[in-house]
Image 1: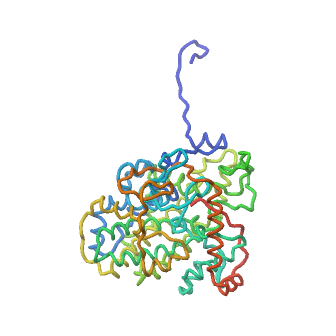
Image 2: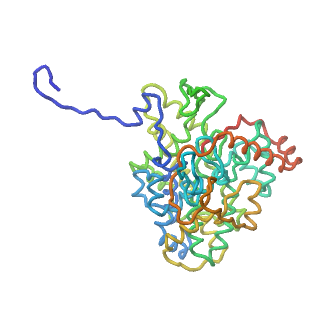
Image 3: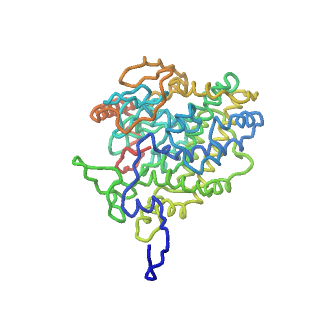
Length: 491
């Protein structure tokens, strides 16, 4: 441009997308195939999977896992930019630690939308629509709203740690039956049972099937990673629906029937802001890995659990400790403060306040994962390093719906004790099927009509409520205090 002297001068103005979105009070929305992986994000899950290998005590197992490091996870130096789901799928092999999100929490291919487009993924395990996304029996395996009082204890984890015999499906149903609003079966989180299920299968595979052992060890990393995410164990997973925000604003995603945005509630949006956006930002600078490593030693330094129930208790212990280190309510407070004029962008404000605590909780997940690997290997009599497993073999396992089958609370005990097989549905049906050779594709936002999902959810909730023993429900209601309104959190 020209200054008063009529001489040409140049300058540039730089900003960040997060600042622009903040000033405009909008959120970036992308198609599913263009988005980064959800929950901790690929960055969080792959960080935990990679770092856990170095903490394993058994030398043979450690060497076996190290030989398969690129199958299990992604190296830290590749995580400075969050990998996209589509890129991971199109590569022909999804590193195992994020398969539960990228593959299993999708419709199986082919699943055709109204335009006749295949929106499924080979190996997907979702069975119905969940609003703007799909849902199914895989979803409750990633979380557990466990921070309500139960059986005379302040929270569900504390009750089960004090009395491990409470780890039953009937008790879990009784706990969720104490919530003031009915919780449907796909929101009755069973994360500790999923880890129990994995321990039993790892034990089975340790000395008999090296390919399945590595496939299970890698995908287990995802669930243990979920257990150290503070918002995956809380009814406050995406804010507090009953409270007003500190600064009034529109909801980042909810709208009324006319398409008008609804008012936001307090903390709404914290889930993705913390576990994906903040984590990705910290990984890009390398600060995330520095903070995690501050809390790691030369090995996991934990006593090995003897069995699957012990692994479930260890998961609950991690969840309890994580909630103490980084309470969800504190995360919400920090997030709300970042909306004040002149504050840092959300990601930077969160990291400045809870970066150290985030390193602590993720390190706890790393250590717990390494311990469970060690324990299952020992319980199963593993004694051989079989070297690197062909990724095609591992892909065959994770695309098989029978492999460590995904189920909800009413079927989990049967699946732990006596795993069942799943018949692959013939290709070409509109309701998704696993088809050998079908192209892996990332699902779009919309799949099936919303009315069908509501009917299915109501039917599942009624069925689940009937299966919980009446005596158990009565006892649980007496033991628990009144819970806040339950919402279908984005997991």
